[in-house]
Image 1 (tube, rainbow, N blue to C red):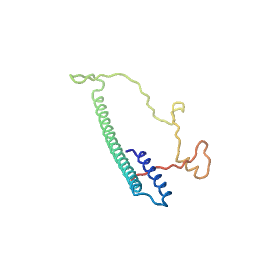
Image 2: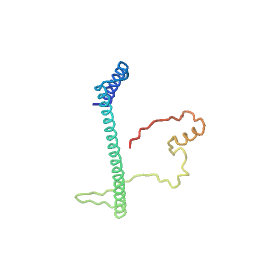
Image 3: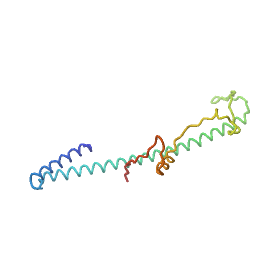
Image 4: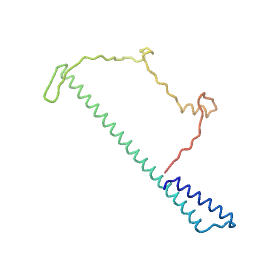
Length: 161
């Protein structure tokens, strides 16, 4: 059963209990009492299971993220090694062509801009991506200053341990 369905059944049992209590001087039947307990227990079980699911998903996320970091580092090392060996081979061959049944080495001309001193490059050639510093804005708002277009919003974040 879905959590919202359990909640509907629990609310129905609560309504029934309130009706009986109003009609019978605060007394409710054993059957109604059983249903109240039953649906509350079902709700608690369902919420507990959802919490377990969230914990499992969090653990899976962390495991995948850690594996991703490990593989990214491994890929970086492999690429650097490949570039190093390629650079060494280029220096060794010094423009000479080479070929066998598995590989062929040839050369092509290309152009690349090398920047010796970035401080001398005109601003029209420099890209700057604007970035909002939310931590600084939060600090200013908390200090009583008005930051146009911004406000401090209090949120409720669920924590499952």
